[in-house]
Image 1: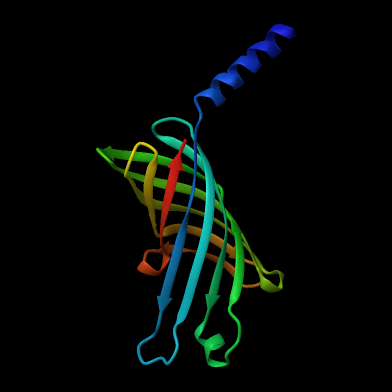
Image 2: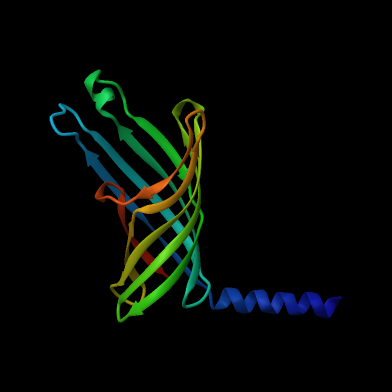
Amino acid sequence: MKKSLLAIAFAMVAMVGSAQVFVGGSLGFGSTKAEGAKYGTTNFGLNPEVGYVLNDSWCIGLPIGVDYTKTAAQKLIDADGTTTWNVAPYARYTFYKAGILSCFVDGVLGFNGMQGGDTNVAVYVAPGVALSVTDNISLVSRLGSLGWNNQHGHGNYFGLNANASITSVGVYYTF
């Protein structure tokens, strides 16, 4: 029993000693306006993140963030926008590397909570690119998503989101 515990302890120390932990996050901004409309919809998101590099192809991460959206109807009546919190753990697979450029896809299980108690659960994949500025600093951009979500009280949705209003850019530091 003692030998097993000692072996587990050594394995954990070795894993932590060679850990590739990263911190960072992303900012997202989007604005849409229908042709001829007086007001559009504006969205802003702040998503700090921590993660762990498992090997050259795989990593896991945990972004926890907040989004703020103000719709055309809210602007029309001068009402406050809607604030949403989100937690979206992911597993990232990097499938292409060339020099400082990497292409990846994130498999995400997301949870959102909105003002008034509404909740949203989502499962989706999100492609992206990473640019290694230095050995420790990377710029990361996610470029849309494909998946399913359930909005409490509003139904289930499956679809592809591929437009500039849902692109995010982040800066990450790897220890």
